Length: 247
Image 1 (cartoon, rainbow, N blue to C red):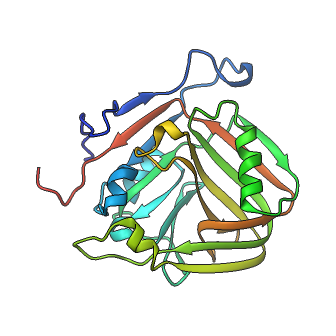
Image 2 (cartoon, rainbow, N blue to C red):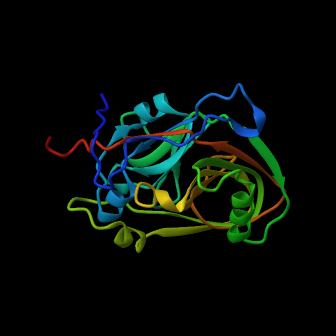
């Protein structure tokens, strides 16, 4: 059973209502879009990689997400209801449901809008196009980009043992992979600057091929003609019960 903690050192209410009374693009039937988050980025940066909830629990909350596993054992991408683990050697696994998640976001992905993006020559260009497509960049969004990519690089990170090092030290030991002419999906989230510390401000994006045989935390990308899907977040539920800590 996941327990919510109702105090937080960043002085934010754990259930954050982000949406206004109106809905996107005049869609009066649009229902609340709830994002669930395991842990906080500020705590992760300092080296807290203990389980907050399991994959089974994550799948009950949503079907689309990104994050990291307990002990930072590889990269996590949840797509169409399946959680994938990309390990330090680049292997893509579907780990068992009791595998722990130390940090991540998930939601039921029901995008309100989609756009066609023409060829891009860099991840920075792609990110700029996505950001300019957001109705209000001061809100949180789930974003998904599907299509062909001509050149990609992405990373995975090694499993850690306690006492855990800070995240910067873990990233120093990352493995970087390169891929040419692949079709797949970039999935992740946009967090505005005022959410820094709760999550990573900016884009947090992971990639996986359609064949589900390669992927990781996206570093660079050149794309062909792709499809961008966007979902605005109305509410954030934050879980902070690290299961290896004494209560």
